[in-house]
Image (cartoon, rainbow, N blue to C red; front, side, top):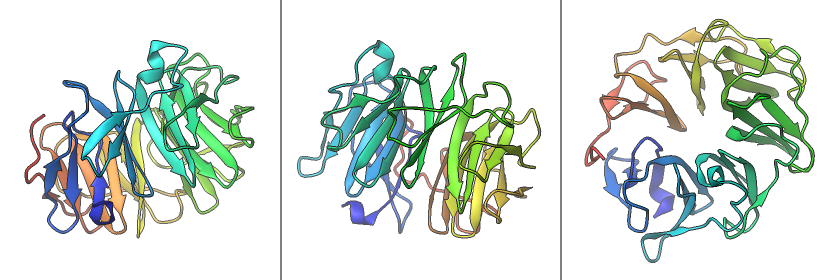
Length: 288
């Protein structure tokens, strides 16, 4: 089933909908998820799909039975540990950012351990890895920003050189040798593993960046509700003169040359030319 899966899109509430690559159609796969619970994050790890919810933690899809199974063992310490913000999968390692820090699993979600003990903030909103180095973006804490760990979260450092004071981080992306952070004050770029940062022309010092993804021709970012593209690993950005797609939600997803965007009022849109033109991709997509 998942070999043909193009997109797992985290803009819908339950039931989750999966899209078909060829026809941009959707099918419900919601059995086993709690009723009336918003799905806040989704992740594909090899052939396994995970869903994060607003208050009920992590669910793993059991393909033979076609149902979702709760996988919250170890997501403890505070009720916010089951408020899922984001996922990331690197090799055999699965990470989940929650309202109460960052958790790690090496057995596909069967067991979780908190790896944010010396991270002086709570909500982890973005995760990326570069080799053995792990980066976490946080928001709403008194020391929010970008944290760096070279030992899988045992010790975290928070370099702030060039970043605004305690920024709210909504997205992290690695492109080439560059690390990019999307924050409420623009897109910042680091060429030395997150220790020094420069503000790119991806917006201004008051811009709100909600999402970044990679496509074959470059990087796409949602900046102030408009899409911009970079073709030089994030150093320079230009706004795409895109057709109106409705209000963007910051939910962007990509697969090779295909770009998907979630909107607040008009569902999901698909672009096959780096965001220049769009078509609705809502067949069978419910209003849930």
